[in-house]
Length: 102
Image (cartoon, rainbow, N blue to C red; front, side):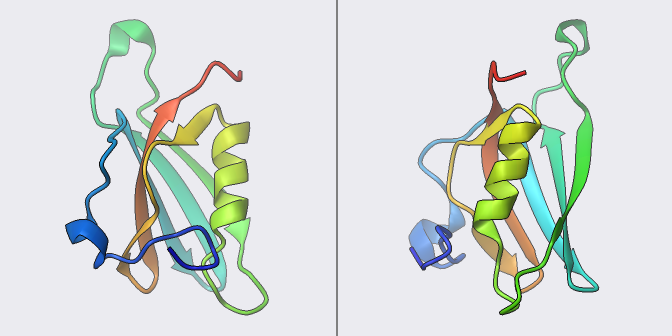
């Protein structure tokens, strides 16, 4: 784990031990990070979210803003259920789950 609370894609083959029913994906574009949460198990009768997109400002040092992304997940009613994994320098993913926070 690095100082951002994230793991790189080489840890454990890029798979988390605990998977959630949602996937968070963070993509960097023009210095900002766009966070998208998508359902992996569509349950329309339960009102599952198909996708949620929010934007997080980039860090001054250009690093991955794990803390800011986690805070936005929490605000939106989600929690990470696995580590952030680097898939590409500008693309990270993590399993997540819904919370009762909302």
